[in-house]
Image 1 (spheres, rainbow, N blue to C red):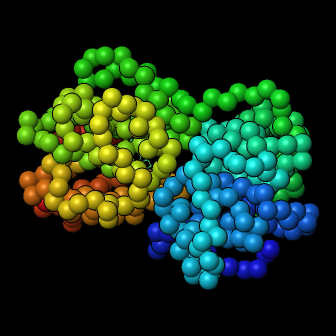
Image 2 (cartoon, rainbow, N blue to C red; image 1 turned 90 degrees about the horizontal axis):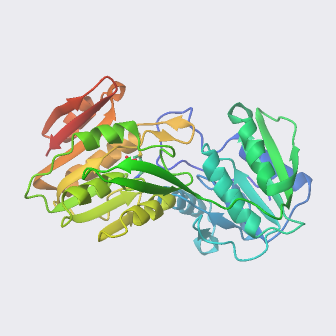
Image 3 (spheres, rainbow, N blue to C red; image 1 turned 90 degrees about the vertical axis):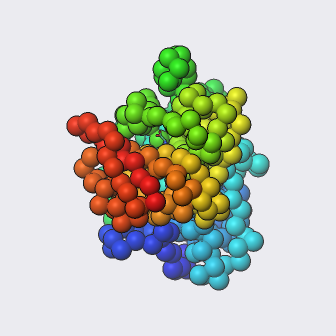
Length: 364
Ligand SMILES: C[S@@+](CC[C@H](N)C(=O)[O-])C[C@H]1O[C@@H](n2cnc3c(N)ncnc32)[C@H](O)[C@@H]1O
């Protein structure tokens, strides 16, 4: 089970401190091998680059993927290790696991809401003999992890620490559990109506509309000739939603790497015709097409911070903008995106700024 594989990150990074797996991943595999757990009814959650799924490929794992980039990374790593990609069985986090599973493996995500969503899905397919092996780096442990786990499984065992990582082993499903997986965010839209924005657990900014996004919304003005709009890194779809409030007849496109984000945006844009792109870059989007692109770019990835992905998205945005199209981008002031944007766009202006955030307007 533990033959060494070469697992690369996707996208690759020059930052050598960023790894493609952690001691927690190794600990999970060691645990399975020491306890001789060898089953074909296994589901793997939050395995970013495929370290766990590909080492367990002979067990025919169901890989629960919430990110298009994750699927892409795992496929690339399978090919690099000469693993038949037809063996990769991806499933979205909202799909029920088909069988009663013997084993679920979770690399515990930073969002404990998402951890809960995974436990709810596993709980539905668990029997008395199902074991759930959760791995995490000790520095990320919080008591809340145990509290949540105890709401779904009666037995919780904690391992000793190994290379600064630990395991939490769960079993014996509880009979009655809370199965809510959607957060509700009260919000006043640009038409002055009180609305509820909904989002699945694990989607960006769970308690309120993100403050940077609110700042962009406050400074949002649409020219009357705007017809085609793209919301990049759309999350729960709030920016596209507000644009549809201002101009209901625009052709709206939303793009996000997260499956749960896309599913949430579909709820929030319920009445509005829109095209949803579940994608981690803009390669499949038509060039010179959009009059307006809006974006609050990603910066945090689990426990990592990285602007490389935002920069790649900016290049894609420049390509898909119409000749006279505008790109509106909001960011934290300290990220100083102007330097980067100016290398990609012909003209970059600051249109609004407060003590924390800045809105850039760019033309190509
Ligand atoms: C800062 S949030 C903004 C979300 C939403 N627009 C809002 O304002 O609440 C960034 C979003 O980028 C998404 N994301 C991360 N990497 C991405 C990528 N490579 N391509 C597209 N979206 C990505 C995340 O899933 C997240 O929803």
